[in-house]
Length: 203
Image (cartoon, rainbow, N blue to C red):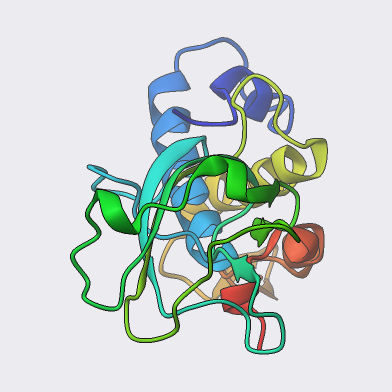
């Protein structure tokens, strides 16, 4: 489900009156939110065919904990909503004997980390796909961050206005040639999204 409604996007497009174009705007919002999700480092949610920003279930296979912090498992998608299960298994079978009980760890929702408690008897194995984590992550559709909503609307309104000149680099008006701005993500949007990026996108 999209974080932004057509009604919200229309606030950025005062030239559009009424709801006649809402179907087109909703399609544009879906494409922009998928592009934003890709930029932030989201992967496909379980059963999904397109990237999404809203809260969804993800089954992740990880190679182990942080190198300097063996009790800390960094998840590749944030914000974290909840942890359904974590298995640590070098044999890659992930049966019940390799399940790490929820009482053994704490969840850092903001930074999307799972941290073993100091008295935990569990450990995270390190190796190819040794960790299987089933989590819920993403943004609540009822209360998405205002900066994220603004970024989506700025980019979507930019693309909506560019439709009439799609495929053109220049337009001529009153015997003057005007160079059009590129259809890539605007710098303003990139700056707004900076703090939402997942660790996998930051080198």
